[in-house]
Amino acid sequence: MGTQQHLVPVFIALCFGVGLIYVAKHRLNDKQQKNVFHILGSFVFLTILIFNIHLLSLGNYDISKDLPLFLCSFMGLIIPLYTYYRKYWTYEILFFWVIAGTTQGVITPDIADGFPSYDYFRYWIVHLGLLIVMFYATFVFNNRPTFKSVFKSIIALQFYMLIMYCVNWILGANYTYLNAKPDAPSLLDYMGDWPYYIVTAQLVIIPYFLIIYLPFYIEERVSKRKN
Image 1 (tube, rainbow, N blue to C red):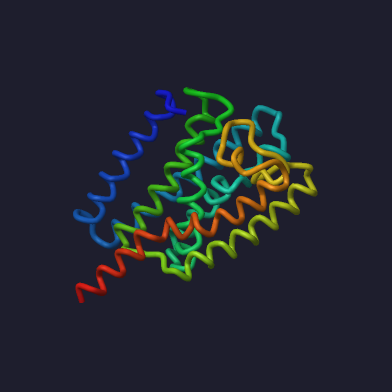
Image 2: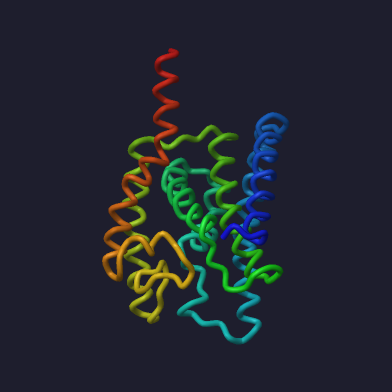
């Protein structure tokens, strides 16, 4: 955390994301905006796909650890469906998942191999790419979450966690860290031992998602006052 390997990709993604959103909003037509959006989602998906093919080619693929089922990788798998169809209910769910999930990953990265490994590039492309996708949808397409979106996203997250619990039980795995904390330092370290950190995390999610929603609530209130 705070090293050059950590800060450089964040800085590059920030510059790229801000620049891309500005150009898309002010210089591209509707069709071009949609094409760029889907290219972003497809690029994140292909990064995950190629990485898993690479692991398979090494001959030591472990389905209890290597399947793309951690939340950010899972979102990377389904993100091209969202960028293609652009359904608002998907935005409602993914917006909070992406902001909440990738923020922890960006602040406290958990990367097995550092630069210039493929795992390093995969990690940052997925985490930062998902953020760019959601900010693109927010500022280029003017999508906005609502108060109800917070709870839709939380409910959808419970279904995801239930599925991961079943997968972990079948494979003897630890996807989404339901059976143990990650080796790298994370916010879970402040939430108690297993299984208490799972309960604590569920309780923290509600105010966390509400905080994420707060700027949009303020924006809505200010807009109503002006009108």
